[in-house]
Length: 268
Image (cartoon, rainbow, N blue to C red; front, side, top):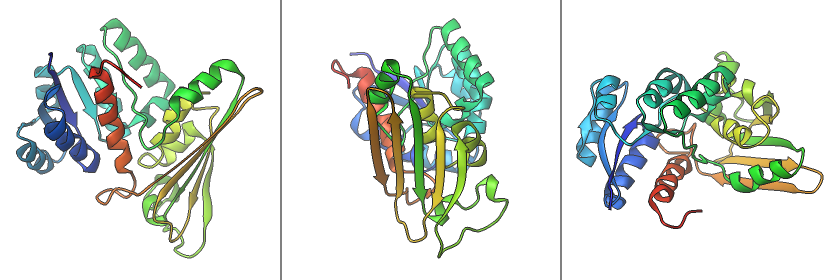
């Protein structure tokens, strides 16, 4: 049985979950060659825990020639390295899907992957229902929206707030618009909206509402698709990651599920 070589870029909460789970439970199919982070101390810590390399540079990651690179960093990082990964014929699994709302970058990624005979595997992140949403879109002209509800603590620091702290007493809708604009205003919070948009009507046409709910302990996403012959309503509620309240551990496990599907004789 072939064992695939894996590298992880980003060693925060999500990257750490992926690295530890793959090492402990999927070593029959995957070998983690190394991990890379802008914070060297974080990479060294995770590398010691899962017994792999702590890369000192991105060039070192590419030079190791992994079969797959998991990106668990930030949209700006993905924009910087995504094309270079694919240009080297390496398959990419990005968690910072929001970067693909940029049409120019999306087209570059698609072209580069095609030219170099590799693929971009988009995980479902902290949401789901991609299969039925995409199938529904193929049937009808549809409208797609996503309503996100998070605590003020999860949303504070977003660029659109310009330093303003959200109320701890009053609920408020802090954004309404397209997924394309949403990821610019909330680069760490709303990758899920772009993932849904890519699977359906596109980032410009997918409507997003982001809401701050004081006292709310979970992250909640309500996805609605409305067509002539099919309506879809998907609700997902998760607990924020302890180490990164802007995200959910489910995003990391969506990558793990994807990795399982890539090697399984029966896939979902």
